[in-house]
Amino acid sequence: MKRKSKFVLFILLFFYLYSQEETPIEKKLNLSGEIKGEYWLWTKENKDKSFKFSDHFEGKFRFLINYENIYLRTGIFLYQPSLPKKSLKEYYYNFEYCHPQAEFLIGNFYQVFGRGLTFRSYFNEDFRYDKVLFGGRAILHIFKSDILLFAGKMKNIIFQENKYQYENDTTDQLRGGEIVIYPFPHLEIGGRYIRLNKEKDITPRAFAEIFGPSISFTYNFFDLYYEFCEKLSTREVLGGRKKGYGHYLVTSFTFTGFGLSLEGMKYDSIDFGGEGYRYNDVPTPSREGISINRGRDEKGGSISLNFTPFDFLNYDGSYGYLQTYKKDKYLKELINKINFKKNEDFNNTFIFEYLQKKGIEIKVELTEELKFINETKLSFNNHTFNLEIPLNFVSDDTLKYKDFGVIFEYQNNPYFTLTMNYQKTTTKIPKYDYEDKWLLFEGTFFITQNITWRIRVGQERGGLICSGGVCRYEAPFNGMKISLQARF
Image (tube, rainbow, N blue to C red; front, side, top):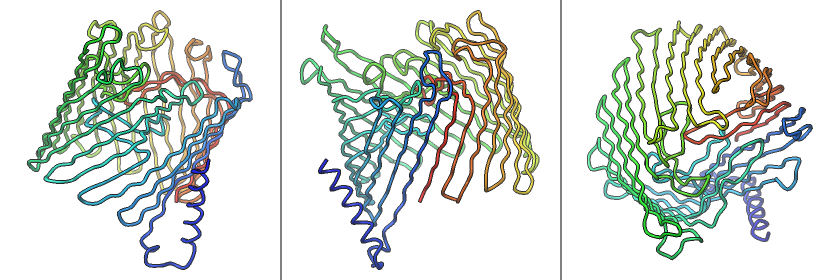
């Protein structure tokens, strides 16, 4: 409590000094920050008879002070639902010194090694997922190389089933390092190592570790990246070392009006962390962001093509697949987008998607979706009209139905945006709490360039949503959401 009081006094003292007559030092100070508040009110019961007239508030504050090479960041996140025992409060702060040859940081931070095979700590605000580290980090930029060392503990916070919750809040200790060498202008060679210590480790030498190299080559129209990693952990009860490995390869060819990308991956027991959470998030070939088991037993690949034969016509297509070694779980994804654009006034996009999932969604063994979407955008002066019409043919095991709707948006730039979203299914679906239609209205108002107010009223059907290989269940919502955001 004393530390928090001293911290608040320090911030107040800083603002007092900063508000006085400017000195040469204060002229070099840069201040920036963000404050956001969001309020949700449920007006209808869900299937377990909860949430009616329940509400929750979440708010965050982030603040940055920068003076030459010195950075001080601080912030707070609050979550307060109607049930007081489920509230959550997190403080964020760090101190960083940056120099052309060296960087030092202590406090909260995020870090990604390579493409995520060995380690990935990040924050996704839209997905409401926070994998934050607390500890220390040092980076050296010497001899055509970047050398990074860090030590810390990670905390995973995710919003799931209408509440924020910890995926992990443990005493796990992480130690890691990465080196990236630039021997030639178009070549990068990297290597990384992570060590994980747990309280339940049988002996001090029973830690888990994950390590591996990478190579990246870029020249004119050609780009290549390959990463390999190996994991060593201790077998519980039996003892001895257990191995896992992962391969990830992506290459692309880019010319004027044409682009081709190929991606391949193979993972075996490369999941790193505990049950239900990861310290690494391996890449997935799915544009939907779907993963089967996040590196425990997966192999797959994708091919993407982007083609612009004329200025007014663009094609963007991809095919991706991912499966377990036994093929008892898999996903196949085909996406085609054709965009027709006539100057800045008219834009039309036709989308065709096919998705097949086996053993991925809970209580649904096999899902097939055939989706058609047409998006039309018309602009003149400061007015923009958007019309989107989706039609989806779905098969969940033996249950077959159509899913369709209409989305209309009007934007008066730069003042406000109004949206109406209507969705309907031809039958009532168990995974949507036996609802069959949803109507949602949304208004976004730009009060100033840095202040935004948003209100949503109506129904949201929820379902499985994924991002970067991480999936969560979004529960249905019926009520009102209000948010206010300001940046300075």
